[in-house]
Amino acid sequence: MRPALAFLVALIIALPAAGQTQLAQQCAAFGEAQYRKLSPSIDRIIALEFPPPALERVEAKAGSQTVSAALTLRGKLTFRNGPPFETHFVCLLDAQRRPLFFYALPALATRGAPTPVTRGGTPAPAPPTTDTPTLPLGAPPALSEPTRTVLPASAVRLRGLVRDLGGRLQLLPCDGSPLTLEDRTPEQELTRALRELTAGKEGRPMFVELYGSREVGLGAGIAALELRRASVETAGCRERFDHREWIGSGNDPPWRLEVTARDLVISLLGGPPTQRVTHGGPQRQDGTIMYQSTEAAEPVILITEQRCVDSQSGSLFAYYVQIRSEGRSLVGCAAHNPSMPAP
Image 1 (spheres, rainbow, N blue to C red):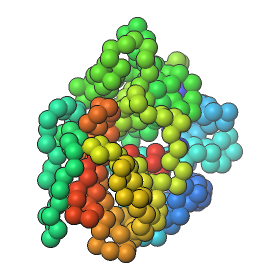
Image 2 (tube, rainbow, N blue to C red):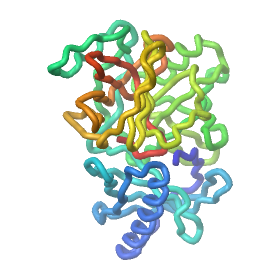
Image 3 (cartoon, one colour):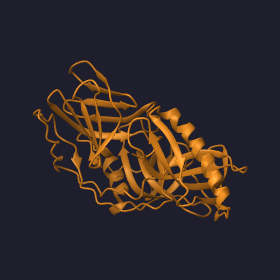
């Protein structure tokens, strides 16, 4: 859930420890049911007692729903196949303190914002050494080396269209009303991407995924803190992930990757028929997420959180992906299902 909320009042509500714990458990159970609908690979969401949950009184609208409070809690997400991880969750509540929406914040202890993108001929990192020789196909996407800055606990994930309207940025969220937008990304990466991808045409929209912080006050908007994705050649808010956890693509020759909770689907334009194999769930190796076929040693999918630029469209992504299959290596960019917790 990535609502664009215009918070008018935000006050800390004092609750006894027992009340905080009970409310956090109710929110975790609600969130668990919602996330299981997105992916059968999700097992449990467990509310942790430390640090204690923080409850804020708010006055806001999320679509047609009235939000009266927001509970921030630390929780553990477990999978049926794969290691668990901890992160912060936000639970939006109605006037009777019943959960309305539930979404994950970034795991601040281990992740932050990538550095601004370096466009041009930055080479892709060498693929991991294997016993099978690999043959790179086509020009690799441009990458940048990540330096991390910590995001605040109040950061929320947003998707929508950004426009430059007479020198002022506006964000039209996929599930909300227009908001003023302030670019606080490193070296104003968002503004630069908007200028480059729209060829400087005022008012032309650019689809974005970003982390932002809500501003307090009447008519307040959103401050963009980290740009995760930017494109003018995409379905944008109409893009459907359905049960897919990852979507990846590359060029020369064009190829497409889809990762669901159980399958890897690889399509190569002008090549062999679409390849569909089952996988054993995500594995982590030195910061890389790996999926491997359960039927053979390959294909292997390697996904790294690193700024990636599509070599043809110039679109920005937060993840770099490599496919090793049949002695070849395909490289490209990937997008993660925004309805699921950040990996």
